[in-house]
Image 1: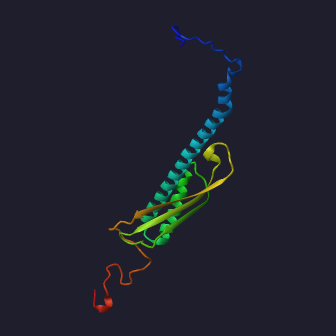
Image 2: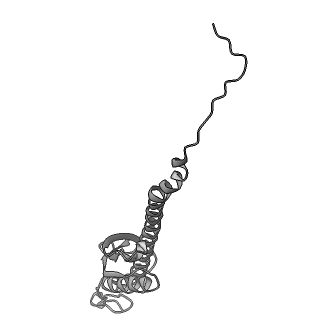
Image 3: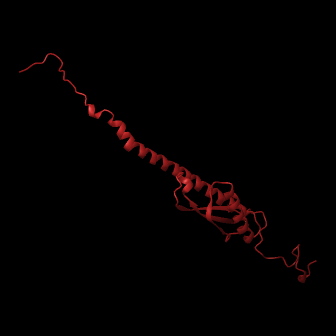
Amino acid sequence: MIVHTGPLRRRRRRRVADVGSVSVEMATLVLPIAVVMALFAVFCFRLAATRLDLGATAAAAARAASITQTPAAARIAAQQAAETNLAGRRLTCQPLAVNVDTSQFRRGGYVVATISCTVSTAHLTGLGLRDTLTATAQARAVIDTWRTVSLGFTNSEGIAGVNRSMGGA
């Protein structure tokens, strides 16, 4: 039986060939992955901002359509509001499609505006990649219960609505 009374000391040899290998691995593997992840994060943030801009445009179009008097005027107002709203943003839609659902265009009803937009992804990454992305946003605005809505009909009895053929004044 052998009993050791002192600490065992082993000589460790330094490997000269391994010095600096972490730096090379960092430069060749980790750095490109970090750059790709950063570009992906920028892409995601800009894509989210684009979707928010499109949602705000749809809301503006629906609101503009809801304060008009007729369904035809609602379609025109929604188109103009969408174009105006997008003009103040970085978003350029080629083409911009504005669809307005006026099937519930009455007091207490609502108007639905759907915006479809084809956006170039060149500005999303900052790299100038040439591709397109089609995004759609929808918003609904309620028509005020206490305002007048014209559906294209006219009052044939005049302003007061009195039926003169029945002996009215």
